[in-house]
Image (cartoon, rainbow, N blue to C red; front, side, top):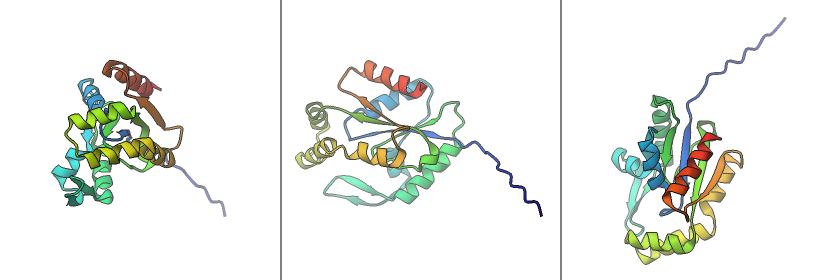
Amino acid sequence: MLLITFTIYIPMKQAIVLTGTPGTGKTTIADLLEAEGYTVINIGKLVEYRKLYEFYDEKRGSYVIDDDKLNTELAQLIEKNTSPFPLIIDGHVARLPPLVVSKCIVFRCSIRNLRQRLMLRSYSDSKIDENIEAEIMEIILTDMMQLYGKDLVRVVSTDVSIEKTFEEVLANLAV
């Protein structure tokens, strides 16, 4: 008996993840990409609006996200994207399955700049220290490298002007 197996390739829509420690410039660049015609989803706003969290952590001043609910919502948004560009996911907690991510750009900046940016946001000293420690320990970069691998992850420094950072992001999107 002859067994024939067919493999059908169905193209899947994908997203680009912009991530990094809070204060590294993700949303600033996401806003510029949106002005260029990209559809941008801000995870923080989405989580709050769609109630994709388990509870609000008073001590940290942030929501504890329900990852399953968030990923389900993001997968639906990626699939519904009608733009000619991939959907941009803006947030430091994005951990989508690799199958739906075409690129992951991790934003980094110096500790000095990060501290100043977080102080301007009126973060508490403990929240500033927590984020500084995360940046020093490269927690987000390490997580993204483990999840997506070196082929999909790009690192962009935001210690330069917004214009130069944006140019570098656009260059990474073109590759």
